[in-house]
Length: 195
Image 1 (tube, rainbow, N blue to C red):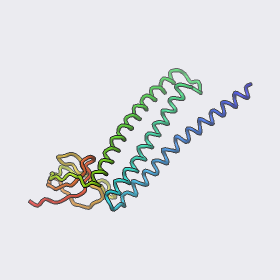
Image 2: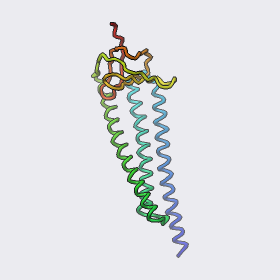
Image 3: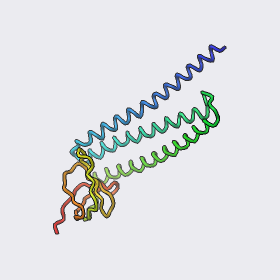
Image 4: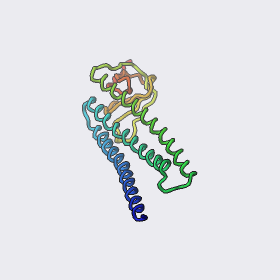
């Protein structure tokens, strides 16, 4: 009788280990694919293709974060409900609280990634249809990032905007004419305003 129960427990443990390894392997693969796409996006010459590649790459990264949260939710669920190692109730309660915290993080990530996805899709539609905003704005601050980065964050009266892959000298306190997409404040074109 004991041999069967030991064999059953061993099979159950191996099954749980396979599930755990799959849960850990999937986010690694998703982050790897997303990173490759985002890095490859730096060499994109067409802005629409850059939007699409960036959208796909970021979607892979969001999916990896959600799968990682589901991994921790799975562990919390198994330990809280099944308690295969027969640990103390006080430790089970800690795992239950950790599971609730992880569930809240997963819900936040789901809502955040959904909103960012909607914005990216709206930007792609607006760019394809030529529906962009043109405004004359004063630059409040400029952040160029590390030397290899081609992205520039620009703080204006309308909020923070991003300029992708264009080499354009922008100075604080100077007015410029910005052509940008409204959903994510992505700048398409910058022009000097001659006073």
